Image 1 (cartoon, rainbow, N blue to C red):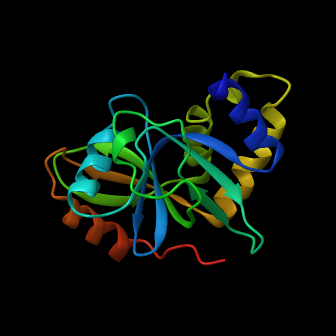
Image 2 (image 1 turned 90 degrees about the horizontal axis):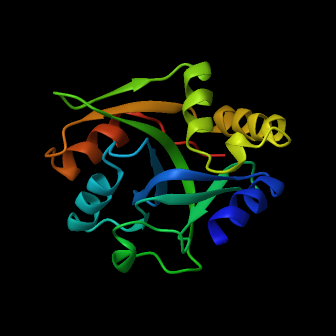
Image 3 (image 1 turned 120 degrees about the vertical axis):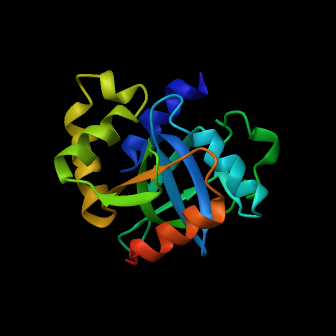
Length: 178
């Protein structure tokens, strides 16, 4: 029941429930979005092994904050790594970036067009993305999110060390700071 109600509650508050992992790097949450088998749990597990806090490896709540940005925190809707969530239930982290996961031969980061980013985000919004009565609101929130947090494609191999991924992300993307 929680998986059905939470997306609507998030949308009503100007936020979104997104399918993806969330890892805390350099004091901010980075949402790593992707379809099934994209590597969300793999990257979250690698982050955990590297000593980085994880919020979830499956579903994350993105909520607006008072400063015009967005925050994320641990939610009870987690995947394989539920027992290893390292952020407390009341912890909130400013969201610094959105990453679309793409498995590739070499590690890299590429900016994503606004249209592609909106399409990818919509695909990661469970339940509300198929509700014709909510789609206009969903697109409005996605547009607002992307005006603050541009999305990038993170190309990686499943065996890339997390420290290399983290260095690539933090070195290539200027974190959102609203």
